[in-house]
Amino acid sequence: MNRQCRLCHGHGYLIATDGEAARASVCRCRDECPECGGQRFVIRVEGGYEVAAPCECVTLFERVRLFNAAGLPAGYGSKTVAEFRHGRGEPSLGRAKTRFAQYEKKANFEAARGVLLVGTPGVGKTHLLTALVGYATLQRGIACRFVDFFDLTARIRDTYRRDSAQSELGIIEPLVDVPVLAIDDLGKGRGSNYELTIIDQLITRRYNAKRIVLATTNYLPEQHLKQRLDASSSRRLGGMNEPLEERIGERLFSRLCEMTDILVMEGADRRQMAPRR
Image (cartoon, rainbow, N blue to C red; front, side, top):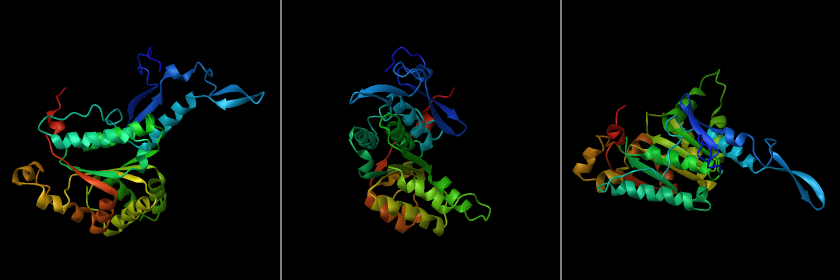
């Protein structure tokens, strides 16, 4: 790690925004690698012969590529699990942070059981989701995809057009194959039964392949509405008391229950607490 660089502070990469997306780039301090001189390969002696081998700097370029392919939204590219803050009166936020910190410690967390984060807007659900995707790509070299539920249903709907350049298969297949899939805002908007069926197929195929799904939603499952929330906490839900099952359908909800643990996050809206500039 080059600790002398004032731009990347030794990380080797920089994160900025590109329109609506977060984008990483290799810092110029690593562009001219001292080992390979920017050639991206080194000459080694193996069995008495000189052979060309990829330089270690290639790993950094590949991890930056994985980060950019993940599709994190602008403003979330630099989030980390460690910097997630919660107050003493917000134990559920602390439990969620602990769970995501545990993923970072797992040798093979992409094969672990998933998590569905449930809570009102602003409690930090997307922060934790994007932080883990950023960590997985840049620090572990694990391929991930981040998708917004509303955007995903809109993309599927767009394939109905005769002149569409994409097919349902072209949208879904990359999301089936990627080791880690993060879905933000489950239940946002109202997808048609057909669109939800396509997403159900996606989740089912990931379930069969034992690939992790991480997701967030503002809508509580029905059992939590009835059993776990009292009147005061229901008010903190901002009136969004429609069950998640009604937003995404019973089949999709049932499959997610098989694949994920449901963590309810209750706390203050961080966006309203943020200082104005």
